[in-house]
Image 1 (spheres, helix red, strand yellow):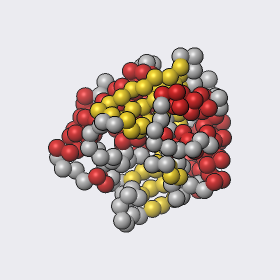
Image 2 (spheres, rainbow, N blue to C red):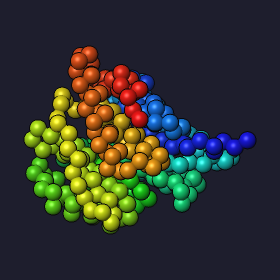
Image 3 (cartoon, one colour):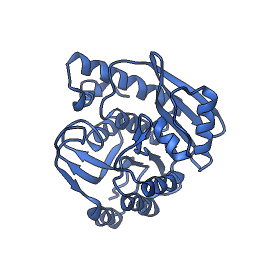
Length: 275
């Protein structure tokens, strides 16, 4: 009997028990899209770091023996998806994971969680930024926000991006080898835009009417849908539209139920609508 009769995505990210982010979001989303989700934890938290207090267990030293057991049983992955990585060592472990498990058929999706709103996260050192710039060369699909796209390309962040500027930014990333890029969370008046770029096709904007306030986990939902759709052969443009629309509906439902911002989006209410 083979363990590899179903499509699988290895998800390398942290687990937060409360707050709807990271693996706690990715596992149900990917599963709903009929792909098996196999988590490799980078850390385990009681609740995400947006709360005033949380329990944190660094999983770095356990990651290599964990993935070695997967290698022993011969697991094969249709996709490999990475999220927040907490140290230079973890970024290098992801490179080791790719060396072990990536095949010519595997789609690698990297969400380079490094910063937001024009600033690098306080936990991210210059050395970690340098390591992440190396890691993204392995990505078939890259899902940075605008801040992260600027960090990856040493571009000055600002608030007024013309389509031509976004294209130049995406082309700088594509020069590293990434085939498909979506730069997320671009504020355009009453819209939130995603700039998509596909090698050989150029770039285009996918815009959604802005609703509510930014919440934890929306990026994880977005990347999960992109990842599952990629291994299912869904058109990239269609996938970005689906992810954007689904997140909007989740935010609206969270507002309707008066869910605190720290608690993320109540995607569970709409999970059965994902196709």
